[in-house]
Length: 82
Picture 1: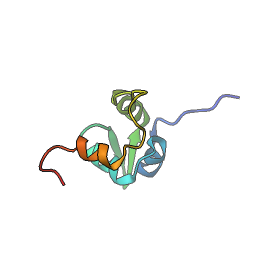
Picture 2: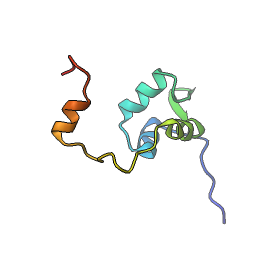
Picture 3: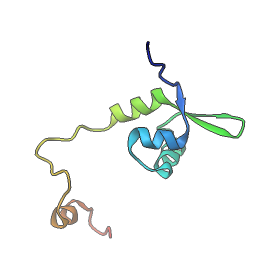
């Protein structure tokens, strides 16, 4: 028996799918990076746009630390940023 993949997810399920917060999903929709549709009062996020967004992100390079130390994080910040 085959599994049917949904065409759209709720913002909460989309957040779980990408491993981010619902606020991040809302910000991505506002920025036009995710496609969302309305059905009555419900918001539905297209799963195709979730996959496209994930594919557009840069790949993690092996030598980059997964969790930068505080010193590395300070060096990565632009000047004047807090």
